[in-house]
Structures are given as C-alpha cells and as structure tokens.
Image (cartoon, rainbow, N blue to C red):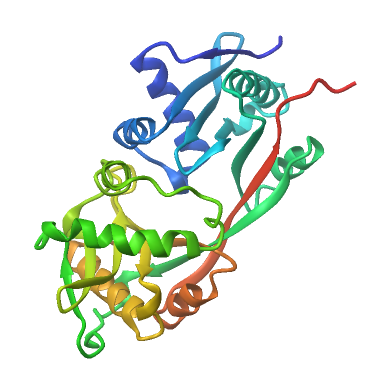
Length: 308
C-alpha cells in the first residue's frame, strides 16, 4: 500500500510525530516545548505524518525561518524498519507542495554523516552538500573545572546576574553571527525578535548564558541549549566575540566558564556541532579536551519532481 501523508491535526498527532523524530534522531532529541519554541520563531511551519496501513511510520517538519526566508528548513524522518516503502518520498512530495504554496523553491535538510543511504537518496534527487558540521563531545566525568583566569581586564558573568546586558549581547551577535561559516547569508532579526527567538526559548536559560565584559562593554557571550529530552547533555549553542576583541582568549574564557558551570550542575557531557570551516573554535575545543564524533551534513535541493 502507498504511504499516506497528512498534516498533524491535533496535539496527539504532534506528539506522535515528535516521537518518530526522536527515535530516528536520538542525538537531536527535543521536547514538545522546544518544538513550540521553534514554531513560534518561524515565519511559517507545518508538521506531517506518514502512515502505512494506518500506522504512523514517518515524520516531516518544515519551516520558513526569519534568518533564511528564501529556503525551507525541513526534517524528513522514517522509522528504520519502515524504510524503502515510499514513506520518505511521500513526505518529500507533500513538503514540496507546502513549499510551493509558500513561494519557496529550495529545501535544506540535515542528515547524519554516517547515514549514507539517506545522503545518496538526497543526491539522486538533486540535493548537494552545502555545509558539514563536526560533532565534538567533552566527557565531564574525568574533567576538573578549569581554573585559568580570564584575560586581563575581562570579567565573565552570567546573564542571570546581569539581565540588563541583553542589548550588549545582541550587539555581539550582530557581529558574530554573520562571521560564522554557514551563516554569512542569514538575515539578522531585529533586537526584540532576536531576544524572543534566540535567547528566551524553552531550552535557553539566563543562568546558562555567560557574558564577557570589558568594563561596561559586552565583548562576547556563550550560551547553552538545554533540553529535558537529553538531561545528561548540555549543548553549546553560540559562542561569539566582537571582531575587535578576537584573538585575546575571550572565547576560551567563556568556554571554561561553561565547563565549570555544567560540571557543577551535574551534566555528564558537553556537545557542540561547529561547521567544519570554523577552525578557530574547533581548535579551541580540541585544546579543552573535546573529542570528535560523527556529525551531520546539511543538504540543499529542489522541490519534488515526479521521476520519469
């Protein structure tokens, strides 16, 4: 029987879709709170379920984000035991129809680096790799919290202790975001939207966001992404330093503050996924003891076309 795809129509449907996603992507598992935050930060969003003989076997989420309004960000997942029966193609077709209705002509989707069949499937349909994110992990079990002081004249504080620094953090983000490989074409949101979408989501916590100060000037910040779906792991989200202050050890001081905080809070691992061209931060992670694991590939391709 051909796979049937429909939009999620209820909270229960959304929960089923998320459960499929989390089973297929355990290293990227999130809670419904994070899904709600993601939806709230999107220009448009849709969630699909694929069914075979009435049984949910696949999930397909698609969003148009303010940072890249000319392309759709998608995630198509099919349970391993149900692959090869057309569910993935059916999701791709329905997501493409949704994109066309919203004036979008290209889709981006992350695929696990070791998932060769999915990468090959995408390539056969015209997708090409545009970015590659290397995963690096620090096991905190055997790590002593770093005691190195920050550079002279630099103070590291938590955003929770200094909430008035939000505008200064934004000024760092305005410089840092476009300089990160893979982000050059992204559009920066206005301050209020950025604050709501990037800093106040369900996985964002002020006490887990660290700010580098030179006197009264915010010169850098680093934050975690924390989800109850992976309670043992803290994910590095953003580490940014103003251009004029780079090369002085500020990023390292921020990372050390994160390591010390995560260790104190009882996290077992720190996880980061930097674009492979971001050599400075990858070298810093290596010096701090992070080890390489397989990462993910970002593929971009066209909307579905029937194969003849």
